[in-house]
Length: 256
Ligand code: HXC
Image (cartoon, helix red, strand yellow):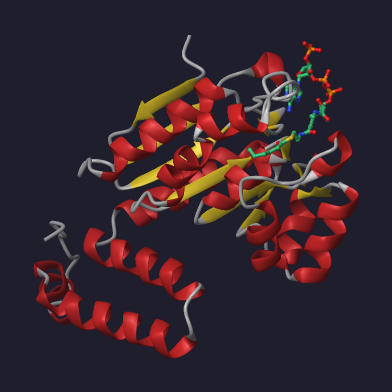
């Protein structure tokens, strides 16, 4: 059976389930390859509106696969070109939601942080414990965690490897929402369904401007926002959305 199960749902949601329960969903080369390939395909597939990435009850992903890494040389790591696979996820123009139960450690926590929205089970276990196996985060953990929760908490977690719960992740601003463990996937799918009904061009612009603007000077970021805002007035969906409001009816969006 595939190590990432992909389910295309009728409501425009692509559900990706990491499927290595015997290894707590550790990210081996095959899982990374499949996640990258499926996210790249979703990018150009108009029928996919939102991507949801999840694991199982025990693990979202317990990190990069230590067995596949333990004896690697720097050149072998370089030749794996893993950063390109991570970029395929980061650059997916469709909203990506991580539905996290169980362990989200190391590369698993970093995978969740590649998403745009994180739904956490209250007992999920997040962390960047790489330091405990002699290394450090290598897929954005030092940077994305810092940007999400601030330097002092991120330093604490990266330097000690100490974990934190889904509820703590929410309280720190890492998770968008915390729910009882059994409700994580349903909550993620509900949010995905809401987004999938929105006008696709507006969704695309919101995501692009928010991500690009976050790393740009404020004036530049505000200009990006202004340009994208103005450009949306060239879309049929803008006319439809506003006319529907004025005519007191539901809009019907076409993605054009
Ligand atoms: C390979 C892993 C794994 C991992 C778990 N397993 N995590 N295999 N890589 N990251 C395997 C175990 O070896 C074991 O296999 C099986 O999954 C079940 O795990 P147990 O340890 O028996 O389960 P449990 O006692 O419940 O503990 C769960 C756990 C622990 C807390 C998640 O497995 C753990 O600490 N895992 C490592 C977490 C970690 O350090 N992650 C960061 C990795 S470095 P067997 O064959 O014995 O049954 C990293 C770098 C990222 O992510 C760089 C960029 C990508």
